[in-house]
Image 1 (cartoon, rainbow, N blue to C red):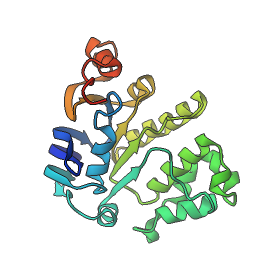
Image 2 (cartoon, one colour):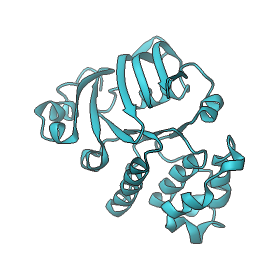
Image 3 (cartoon, rainbow, N blue to C red):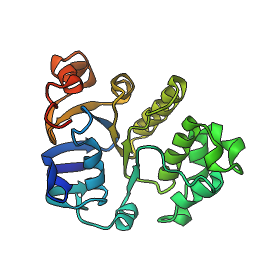
Length: 238
């Protein structure tokens, strides 16, 4: 089974950002989404998660059409989204943040399993989330998403603003989640080396479309990927 996105077109008002974008994320795999700023990467996640309307296309999760469902219904169907900049509830404790993540499936919350993935959070359960380091807040944001036992996990720039050690820890957790075989992971990242270390496949987004697709090894040294980051493929989108 998988998260499958087909010919997705979406944007903001009259501004069309995605143009018939298609990709597939099989269960038990990570698809990295890379590209220059303004290419449409965050818009892709927001459209899949129902935060902005799509004008056309299809999104299916385990063969079930989910495009157009309200965000809370998507959570119940097994979709979890970790947005950019973490967005934890700073005044609440670490434990309360995690508990809130289980609102859609409170009887089956994987509290112990989540803490096992992020042992640095264990001694901080009573601590206010806003007092954590940036890396710990990102761990908490991902842990909160995992509390709903998602079938598909969307992550927007989880490495942004973090120390290299924290980036390694987080990417190692994503690799463990992938290897568990329980979910599809759609990973938007600007940090190519971090994303390509854990991804099974990758797409380069330019002008709201998939410009290139392949394995990390195929794309890492591609001149087209360098163009996407330094203005060639994405000059009009930035």
